[in-house]
Structures are given as C-alpha cells and as structure tokens.
Image 1 (tube, rainbow, N blue to C red):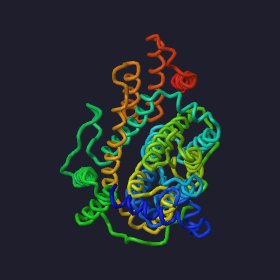
Image 2 (cartoon, rainbow, N blue to C red):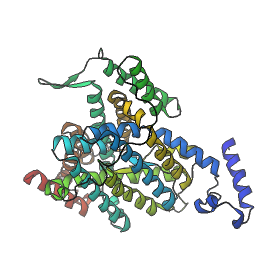
Image 3 (cartoon, rainbow, N blue to C red):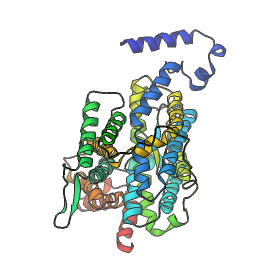
Image 4 (cartoon, rainbow, N blue to C red):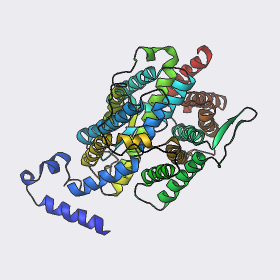
Length: 453
C-alpha cells in the first residue's frame, strides 16, 4: 500500500469515528467518508482533471469558428457547456467525471455537417439538441441497455477509432502536414513552413510529455508552441485575462425545425451513437478506476451518470456547443484520488473561471491546436486492438467503418457503410443469428439514406 492510500485510509478511519451529524456538509452531501476520501484530495483531483482536459477551451472555439460561429461566443459556450455538464455529473450522479464538448463530434459538426453538407451551424446545433433529447430519453428507459448490448463490440470500437482517424486527418490538414493534390488527392506539405513545423513539434511534444506522465502535457504543449509562435512573430499578444465575451451570438440560436429534415436523420444518428458509445465506454472505465463497481458487478449511480451526460448535450446545444460528453481524461483525477462528485464540481468551477481567459484563448493559433487534434486522434484509435481480427465478418465491416469516415469526410457515412456491410456479410455467411433487431432497423435506415438522399 502506497503512502497516498495510507493517508486516505487514515482520513477515512478518523471521519468514520465521528457521528454523522458532526461531519461537514460537503462530507455528508458527497459521501466523502464512505468513499474513503476528503475535501483536499477531491479538490486536487478536480484540478488534475481540468489541466488534462483544459485544452478543449482552446481547441473547440477554433473548430466552431470554422463553422462560422463567433469565436468569443463559442469560447464562452464551451466553458459554460462544460461547467454545466460537470455540475450535473457531480451534484446529481456524484461521480468524479469531467464533461466538455466532444472531440471528433465538434469536427464532424463543422467540417461535415456545415462544411460538406452545407447546413447552417444553427441547423447543426438543432441536430445536436435532438440527438441529446433522444439520448436522454434512452437513458431514462431500458431501451438504452438493449441498444448498447445489441451493437457488436467490434463495431463499437471501430466507431471510436474511425472518429479518431477522421479527427487526425483534420488535424493533419489544419497543420499543413497533409495538403490537397489534384493528381493524387492528398500529398505531404512542406515542413519549411513555420506553422507546419510548429504543429509537428506540438504533437511530438505532447506525445513525449505524456509518455513521461508530465502533468497537463497537452495544455503545456499548446501554450509552449503558442509562445514559440509569438517569439517568431506569428502570434499577436492580446493579453491574458478580461471579462468574458458575449454569448449572445450563439445563445438559443439553434434551429430545431431545420434539423427535422429527412436528410438530417443520419447526422442525428451519428451524433447519438458516437456520443452514446463513447460515454458508456468512458464511464465504465472511470467507474472501475474509482472503485464504483461492486463485487456483484453493479455500478453505483451508473444510470444517473448516463442521464447527467445526455442532459448535458441538450443544455449545451442551447449555449452553442456540439455534443457535451464525458472525458476519459477524468481517469487522471481518479488516479489523483478523486472518488466523488466534488471532483466534478471542482472541474466545473475551474471551467467557469476559465471564461476570464478569453484573450489567451483568442491567441492560440490553429497550428497549436492541430498538434493536440493529432495526438487525441492517436489515442482514440487504440481501440482497434479489441476488434476480432479472426472473423472477417466482424473485421471487414469494422475496417470499412474506420477508413470511410476520413475518406468520405463524414462520420455519418462511415457509420452507415459499416452497419450495411456488417448485415450483408453476416447474412451471406449464414450468421444471421448474430444480427440483432436494432442492426436490421439501422441498416434499413442507412440503405434508405443511400438510395433516396
């Protein structure tokens, strides 16, 4: 047993010797003693998680600005959406999980729904809102468990890996490492271009610092490369702190009726499924690390955690956020001792405080955040190791889903082609028993999309 665990157990034993009425309000509300933790540990854990996931306050506004949204308003929306999600997770579910706009889904929002499909960002926000409402309804009913369990594991991991590859391509394109070519479609950019070189340095710096478990590796690397760009005359200094910009340009700007078009069905489903499976995987992982899983397999407050996550996307869309989801970086806070919702509330308060860093966020260049995009993409692709490579009826649909997301520049198209391929191969190989009712329904919807849209 290490010294940290000994201190936590000592604190727990001391608190347990006190009558319930004599324990502090925070101890009673968050059940700190029951989870063998204390206020100081929870605050440190919250700070740890915030530093590891804080890069989102720089990355998300840059991506959303490419969709035509006001950068300042997108920055405030990012902070508020994340803060609200953390408060819901902490106060309602009592889980040590941080939430923020999802990486990959924000890129899909901007570069596919708005960029490729030509919808206005207001309509895309409407689709986020609708998918959030559906997710919330599924989280209340037992349909959620049925749907999660009916999707094959290979397809779930492929979905996350495909989103990662899609995100990585966007990062490489933004960095200038990959450029368009009329003859070969894509080719390598020039590293003699300072911005391209700095983006590559940012990625390598993040990877190196992460390997050595440096605290806040992504956050530190983005700031370091921005400072380097400032020294090279590529970044203009605007200050560090100020009052938050107005959120008016994005607040309640969503167009729900516009998102009701038939053509948006696949977009809504893409937002829904990627968010749902990513959330389930993240929460399961964090629950195990935080000792929230009982010996009989029951996960404490899992239903509440899913409801908090899904509801966050609904309210986030009202502010102007892409789907808000649970972050796997929360595992860093759990490793620091976070066990209860006080950790999540601490993260939320730090996101609120971050709203006053708008000048700093406005200075962060795209090439600095591109390095972070590439690194996060690599992490998301590690799920490929869990795919069943011995059965081609599982492998081929998974591979198609993964590669078609970046090649068609659409998460929705990749998901659709993966499910259709899965159904066809299983039927042709005599394995129809492995096709669930939900897979049949989704396949029919996606085939209809390809034929009529």
